[in-house]
Every structure is written in C-alpha cells, then in structure tokens.
Length: 102
Image (cartoon, rainbow, N blue to C red):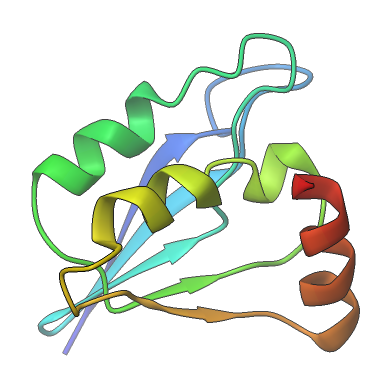
C-alpha cells in the first residue's frame, strides 16, 4: 500500500501558482486543494484530471482561490451524475471558502 503524489499545480510555479495535488492510495484518488491562479483563472490542470477518472474526495487546506478556486469546475463536472466527491476541510475553511466563491 503506497501513496503516489502528483503535483498538478503549485510545485513548479514560483509565486502565486495554483495549489493542487493528486494523492492516489489503493483505488482512491484524493485531490489535496483545488486551486486556480487568481490572475489567469486557468483550470486546465483540473479539467485534465477530471477527464481521466473519478475522485473520492477533495481535501482543502486553505480558503483562498489558490487552494479552492477550482471547486466550481469540479462541482459542475460531477453535478447530477451521483458520484460527487466528498469535500473536506475545517469549519472555518468551508465557511470562508463559500464566501470566497460567491
């Protein structure tokens, strides 16, 4: 049982790149943060991930766009198909994240 970590954003960019990492454990795919760059709003890293399969969960570590700005893309992709990933975060992250996405 190993964990594979794939940086989808944030690991290669300096400064304000999106934070987004795919964690693969057994048959589970967990997204650690779903960020987008607040300047470009580019979601290509998330679009590519969604085209390649399902997600078990999204784990949020912060409430700003660099960490959760891609959640609307994920919601739109899974809405109505019955396999929406669980979205996890602390109460403040979830509350402030909702405010940030309004």
